[in-house]
Length: 314
Length: 74
Ligand code: SF4
Ligand code: SF4
Ligand code: SF4
Image 1 (spheres, helix red, strand yellow):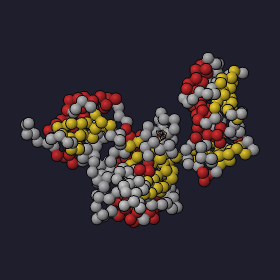
Image 2 (cartoon, rainbow over the protein chains, first blue to last red):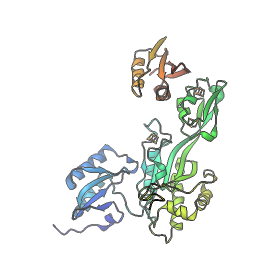
Image 3 (cartoon, rainbow over the protein chains, first blue to last red):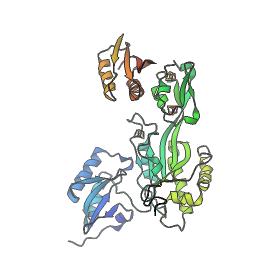
């Protein structure tokens, strides 16, 4: 094989993953939010045909991975993908490509523009070195939470706070019927709202024929400290109704805390640092800039006891 | 008034059937749909509202629901 100089800068950011075979790599592509134009998709197909194995793999985090790429072809792959602005993703201890569901444009459940948020995070924070471990962010459009926000280091979930204009209500009962959380019950022909049970899904707003329900506020519910893998943790609630335009700043604030508190800890994920430092520390840190949105108190990331051996079984 | 019985039809077939039935009905006409409890009564009214029809009322009957709807203009 010809000795070819490789631009090592391409390798630095990651996204090139060693395969079993000699000289062969998987090239992970950057597809924030899992959306890409058909033109880009066609270009990827062309490159995969030319340099890869003839198939691609869709990673569980919405990246397209080119398989069986010879390292000698890296520069050509990067250059040709660049013709359609397709970039290579990252791996290692960095902010990863954010994932997102389809969001609100065409998805009837979507409450917020998850796609826009994912692009903003990708633009501003992608590839930022954490100094410690990987850092995953995702955006769900509503409380159905298809992207599983609580399994990310910072997970966002679209939310809406419903407000009733009683005069506009015709007493049809559809909202109470639609509310799966039992937050609405009909009394004297009008819905009665039990705020404690509301999970901010907005179903009442969507179903009301007279628009008696409307959104008093809208934004993201934020859960922090989740991860999956060998020692899973479920992230816990830190903030509600964070405005869409402040999502990037919010993540940056979490990242700053992580970078500082994990100093010297080695390859440790955010959730484990929260367990070590106490959730109060992170909550206080976030309160400085997000006082209107953080919750009064939370809990530590929830340890999932599903590993081998189970407790008590040696 | 026309009654369209969608009982026993699951989502999303019930919605598609409702849509097809509404195609032959003039805008402004009131129609009654019979819907099963559970997913149908939660999904179909909302989807029909999204399509621009006006929901007038929902009543629980014995074991099912009647949805009153006014056909919207396209
Ligand atoms: S999280 Fe909600 S908006 Fe996003 S895909 Fe799932 S149901 Fe749709
Ligand atoms: S937003 Fe959802 S949970 Fe809250 S009252 Fe409306 S339907 Fe119920
Ligand atoms: S859906 Fe709207 S009109 Fe019907 S009971 Fe609820 S608030 Fe009133």
